[in-house]
Amino acid sequence: DAGVTQSPTHLIKTRGQQVTLRCSPKSGHDTVSWYQQALGQGPQFIFQYYEEEERQRGNFPDRFSGHQFPNYSSELNVNALLLGDSALYLCASSLFLSNQPQHFGDGTRLSIL
Amino acid sequence: EDQVTQSPEALRLQEGESSSLNCSYTVSGLRGLFWYRQDPGKGPEFLFTLYSAGEEKEKERLKATLTKKESFLHITAPKPEDSATYLCAVQAGQGGKLIFGQGTELSVKP
Image (cartoon, rainbow over all chains, first blue to last red):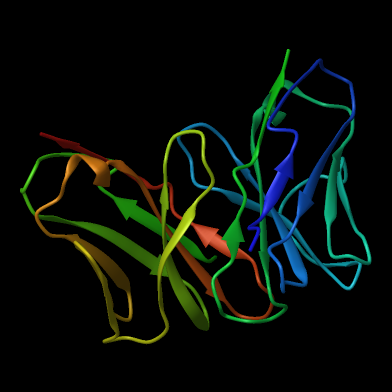
């Protein structure tokens, strides 16, 4: 039973560029959440997708956008990259509105030069 | 504003030296409190869920407890392989977002 998978594992971009990160949820899960984790900090919630719609959003600018596909996989897009966007981006999957635990992938390490 | 605070930020123990990690929270309508373990370069790995004050969960050398304002993760006779960052998160109100603390970095020396 495959867990949450994310790609790519590492990415290097320059300021002003755009990036797309991908996530496949754990089998049986229908909801994908994205988090940003800066070095030495806890993850910060970006947004959550269910039934191909953004259901909840954290305190992140519009440069951060997402998409969910019919097979429940998801993408995170970040436009006009800033140095401060350098972080580990984590995807978590779960069942919608369940208080069961979210399961995380190993993340994409994004470095902005 | 919903908030989660973990202490200490870092903890160094000798193998076999028991201790506790603290997670204090202020949220409206707690639906669940979650403990995760995170190894360097990896995503958080789920450990426990606690739903109501007084609840306790155990797994090997770890025991998690919950009160109305905080949770403790007790580590009994730790081993070097228990070294990791331990994250506490709460889920509150409507919606599914998790609010994380900053984590406690645990180091266990042989």
